[in-house]
Length: 420
Ligand code: ADE
Image 1 (cartoon, protein in one colour):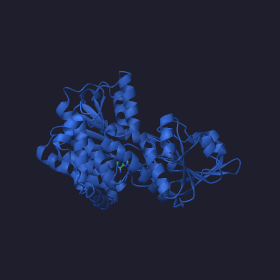
Image 2 (spheres, helix red, strand yellow):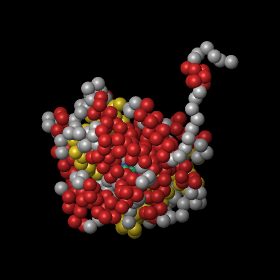
Image 3 (tube, helix red, strand yellow):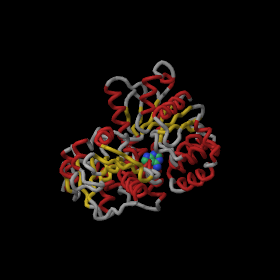
Image 4 (cartoon, helix red, strand yellow):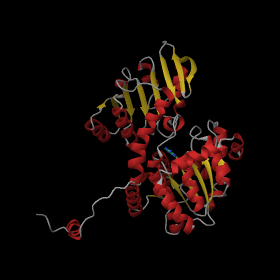
């Protein structure tokens, strides 16, 4: 159990302080944690979490433990683990962690297996790797015990809906990603800020005046494009969806095909969830010194194999920056091995935004315990009332008050007769 070994490295004290710092900005989760502590909704339940091992995740798993859960954590990405956080969770909070930053593929999957062998009643996933492995390799054993799971991210929700469609999904899932208090803030403002943060920590390049290409204009792409513009870049957007393309255009971005953008691009960031978005033909068109990065869930958006095949040499020039020299002499810089830049080179989304995401996770897990008998083996969304409650608590924690409808105004909205 790698997680138990980490405490020997003496990282725990720093991890603990950073976990506290994040917790001080997660007031909504803090309130839920206090209630969990009194009510113990997870008494007798085992929860296996497969999430990025960050200070924010630490606050979530502590809240689950406080609620009576027997909880373990493994990483949802080989490069996103903060080792000091893992060490502190093990040493200070007694929560087993199976994760180490930079782990190879086999270790990553053996850690997922360790989390599954915990024998969860509930799974908490980010990207659906845990649920996928559970269905593939533990169908006759651990899978049968699971009453439900939650999913954090767009890519995971897409995979799970495919499982549902194919009749393969064996327990209900709550798509936390699809709550408004998650997607509209975490995906947009979280990814927007943390991607720029990762780019700056990895490279320290000047952003203003650069041609910055954002591939994908979902909520994450919107966030990255908005923040890159805010830093003074000339931002171009590429899309495959005609509606999103118009939105990007009317938000003031130049919308082009990636082939058209590549000769001008200084920085290219993929946030599509798709495969080989930056492919060989695009790399051939790139100008010398282009930075390629990805903030989508998996490291499949940049065709790294094609990049390697075209290269005559490669070398690490800084942490998270690999220089590839092509046969033409041109250099392409790949950031963070094409993995999530924001969680590899920086610390992921800030705590204040993860507060809402993880309030959703905590309430979703509680909802599964309470409603397990009535939930179909499908992908569900959290009830609107819980989404709204999280928003109300978030506003309150920020000291913001909003108006309320009068009875007369509510009746007006509820009627169909009153037009003029
Ligand atoms: N996903 C994006 N940012 C994150 C963070 N800070 N913690 C956990 N998961 C994340």
